[in-house]
Image 1 (cartoon, rainbow, N blue to C red):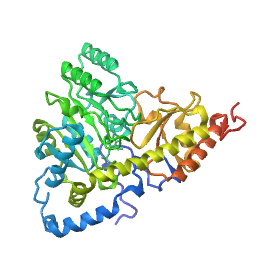
Image 2: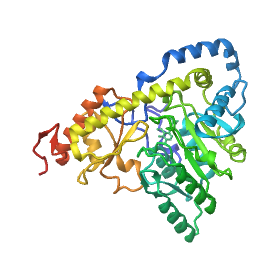
Image 3: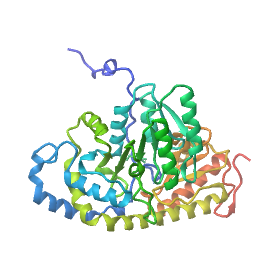
Length: 414
Ligand SMILES: Cc1ncc(COP(=O)(O)O)c(C=O)c1O
């Protein structure tokens, strides 16, 4: 009999992602992760909803997919039909919607439906790390389009599409987060959405619209979804309850023409997303979604104010940013001397976690001195203390900011 632990290493196929590091807990001051505000999770409403829906329909849990079929709990899809019509101008039926386990699963499903190794996609230059990493892992080439205050720049997109055409490369999709872009916080206006649709149609490239932050706009006003504006059904739309209710529920959705949905569905091989979450959400959202969201956004806006004030106080003019119209993150530019990947490592040792810009961008030099700060999860006090601690580390590592809290400091590298 042999002794020792079994060696799995020789069995692992080529191409697996690197081994995961063990989770060691959240940092004391965590400005990373798209987490929500714990005080804003509508607990009483969710408890009430769970109680009501389980008493009424709990026995349907005995059936895979409840009694709703493989596309997800029908009352949740019916809620989405009404919500998407009212908020985003999307006309669809429950049959055009697939409920998935968070919009991350939507990204995986759409990618596996459309992409093969060596394909090319167009994305925003600064974009969601989760989308970027997936594409890298699939061996897909990404063409990053720079953004301005209204999101993806159409002149740059037109030029990129022409350039690809000249090289005989047909991109598989244009991925965009048009409504509160991650990480820049921009919102693409209606006119630009029309221009994007025109370019997509002229070049025969579909649009992949990721709208998971669309509920988190301070004044609640959003342009129609690109999906709603498309006359040729060339858009796949995804959304999520992670940002409006809670990410741990893992409930998202895909809206797409049946031609596409019918190819996506066979790839969702988990026999349906968690049913309890869908039931509770449907029950809660039908009666309370509309009153919950403005409360949530008021709380998030207040935290953003605290963050912007803390940055102004601790970094002064060294931290530049636009005041976003919604969302849970701030995209901050520090002086060129600052390398945010080094800053992120150094600040972690002081209990402050930040997202370094290069992990959120296709242009590593443009994003080198930028960082993303998420503000929904830390408390107001943690935001103030965390930004003060970050400024201290930044001054020690880079001599920036020269002044902290209006007290002149001696620069470490001066
Ligand atoms: C742009 C974007 N898309 C998708 C996701 C995934 O969200 P979830 O899987 O929780 O719905 C996130 C999460 O932060 C995101 O920022």
